[in-house]
Amino acid sequence: MSAVESADMKPADVLADGRIARRFAALKAEGRAGLVTFITAGDPDPAVSQGLLNGLPAAGADLIELGMPFTDPMADGPAIQASSLRALKAGMTVRRTLEMVRGFRKLDADTPIILMGYFNPIHAYGVEPFLAAAREAGVDGLIVVDLPPEEDEELCIPALKAGVSFIRLTTPTTDEARMPMVMRNTSGFVYYVSIAGITGTASASNTAIDAAVARLKRHTDLPVAVGFGIKTPDQAAEVARVADAAVVGSAIVTRLADGLDASGTVKPGTVEDVLGFVGELAKGVRAAQG
Image (cartoon, rainbow, N blue to C red):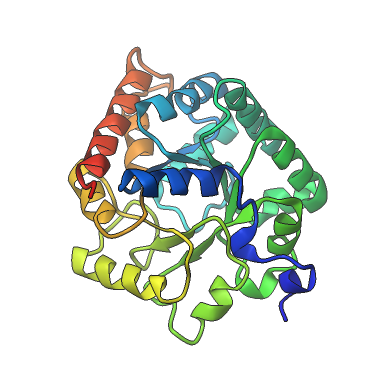
């Protein structure tokens, strides 16, 4: 019996009436996959980042991953590493990230927000205080890439008890023997990392993604979102034909970085350009409907 079960909790039922579950139910009713977008909180500065975050739902984002800046983002490629450094230089912290979520919730009560990052800043904040503050701010889920299932007692199980979904990454190297452990306390949705490596580099073949999603569906009833390497509306559409959601991060972060001048200041029209790109991705995902 797992720790979650001993607490009379079923991971797939955590926040069964919450934003993540409601959004995927709505997407299923529409007969389409969702678009999950990633940005780094505070990149390139808190004000611009808040404006971008606030504009994502209207641009077409169905769920939002908000990166918590960290000095050593080991699973991330150059684009997201650079975005994290820009945000830290601009004074971004975990507390300010949560303030961003609070600001967003004043405008949007429905779009799920998932904080994505590493355990060190959460540990420094304090697990219980962090979870309480995250829940109060309007955070729906966590993706913490450096905590394997063997460490579930550190954060995963406390998060579930606090009513915050803990979303697990699976990869092409997650074999059949390990899959049940990976899925055991996962909630919200499963994030399939379609390549072995860091974010924003290569892209997996459609055939490989098709097979991987089918395999995951044999292990879980949770929605499956596919990310890493999706850079274009056409690629997003291909993923949306087989998965429950397509995740785009590095391409959005790169688009933002391309709109900065030599001093790192955002150029006029950059936020609108990034949101326009999100709109193109959303059209790609919706084109795969049915």
